[in-house]
Amino acid sequence: MNLLSAFRTPLLVAVLAALAGFTARPAAAEERAKDLFGSKKLPAATSAQSIGFYSKGCFAGGVAIPMDGPTWEVMRPSRNRRWGHPAMIALIEKLSRDAAADGWPGLLIGDISQPRGGPMMTGHASHQIGLDADIWLTPMPSRPLSMAQRESMSATLMVDEKTHLVKDALWTPQHTNLLKRAASYAEVERILVNPGIKKKLCDTVKGDRSWLRKVRPFWGHDYHFHMRIGCQPGSPDCKAQEATPDDDGCGKSLAWWFTEQPWRPNKNPDAPKARDLMTMANLPRECRAVLDAPGPASVEAATYHGGAVPVAVAAPEPEAPSVPATAASGTTGLPASVNAFTATPEIGVPIPRPRPGN
Ligand SMILES: [Zn+2]
Image (cartoon, rainbow, N blue to C red):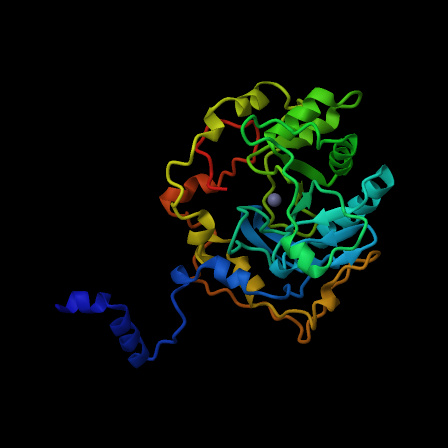
């Protein structure tokens, strides 16, 4: 073993580093953002702020939607993804009430965000800045679901996997009304649904069709829809998404989804996903401060109960955690293999591109 290869031996490097008095903290480049954000149990107790982009960012001042409400139930509670920007949480609560008035029995709420957002250990490229939420297309059952049932209950697949068309026996006018209600809010910029669901709306919605503009076809989203709101006031570092085109999206761009092209098998299904590669250096550097900020005293202190949005009060006043001048900037590019990630395919008219892993 020559000297150079000796230095490549991690253990030896660690020993030398310890002898030299370096801390054991790994280099920033080795810190996987999903591990750091995935382990946070509480939000950053500061004013609400989304930082970065839907698929590359984090947020502070998050609040949780209660596990149960009169018109909703949180599904998969063990994931601890019922956190969002306060405006998002308030809107979900409002949607649950409005939908109930429209005849939908109540919302089953899927993933929103982790307490401080950021990339997740599993699933979802987006949902990172507290402005995305998944709502099941299965209505809330009349009997309350136990916590165990919420972990295990399957959702209803609304779309035939071969034809990519909605299963007509399952689709009801109430499903259409729920999506229309969600699209009616000014804050909602985009609703993602399976192409089969988009086609069903295109084929059946009469009268006002202006809201169809917000409903965008995307892979998956066949048992839930994804509601995305825009950057909220007080978030100067929140990066807005491209506006949706003005038309109803029922023309050529939808037709593409019913060709064979979007459904070709992923040639490289085992390739690492962006979330597996993202380090703190890939996120806006303010996300380091979000990670380091103190949390509230309890989950309850940051849980939304209607009316005024709670501001979680941390035990100590959060100091502005210092960001070293040498910290890698958020503009650092991801490895070339995942550059396509930064321009999320959820934007605009779908164009042919390799199918993402999920
Ligand atoms: Zn989603």
